Amino acid sequence: PAQIYEWAKRADPAFIERAWGGIIILLIFLLTMNTLAVILRRRFERRW
View 1 (cartoon, rainbow, N blue to C red):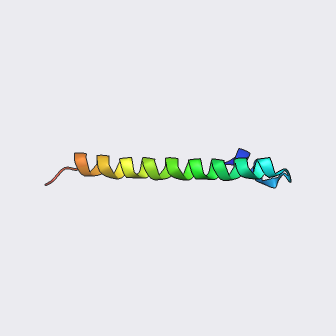
View 2: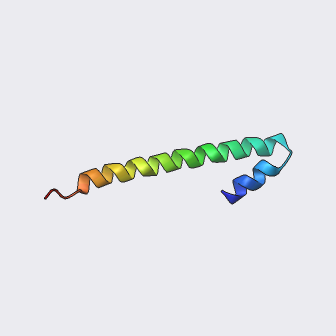
């Protein structure tokens, strides 16, 4: 996240595109990990 912030501060349009790409990749990674956690929690949840 810190590197993306540094890229976004630069005036060069290529850095803006990199910042957007980094943000999208991090969001996809976050959603994937969250979905995996929900699936694993439901699968291994104990029923009393």
